[in-house]
Image (cartoon, rainbow, N blue to C red):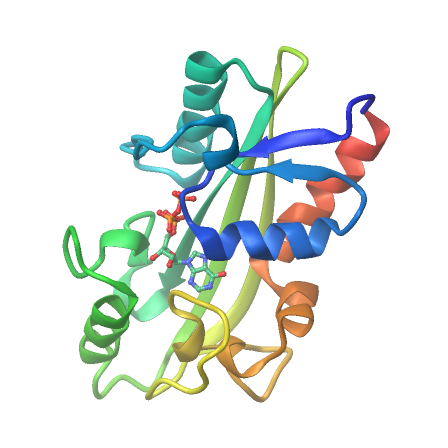
Length: 194
Ligand code: ITT
């Protein structure tokens, strides 16, 4: 990639910080705020890929920038894949991560088979092309929240590679095995070749 600056189409400050940390000095990541986009970008598709593409296309169409967007879901087997693509609003519109986690733990009460996975799809629009990159991490939903690092569902998710939750890890430890870390590594491989 000739110009090593690219926009990350997210309104989630935690995602922005994670991606900037993963990318390090290899690329300069501009936030939506930095390009003057302050509105909520619609994400009404029913797949992670569809939503990631919607967000990236919105920025390209309205602001003209090549960019990438991330859509992430937590899929819980005992709940037939819920909250999945609806992870951000599991407890209803306007509810925060604490409410989402509380509902998840309530819906899993008494259930011992607690396998789950985080999936991230990153959609990239670059030089007139659209591409997607997926990252996944297998794990389980804990019986209660543990730790205060990270964001979202991190306190209740323990990856198979670890004995502790994502919220009990340093950012670098989480990024090394996480859904977003894995999807971003694929994105970077592509950008470094482009
Ligand atoms: P943007 O769409 O603006 O990027 P968002 O917070 O709406 O931000 P998503 O729709 O992708 O992002 O997020 C789905 C939900 O999953 C949301 O509640 C997040 O808090 C949560 N989430 C995303 N990534 C996570 C991670 O790495 N660890 C824990 N929870 C995460």
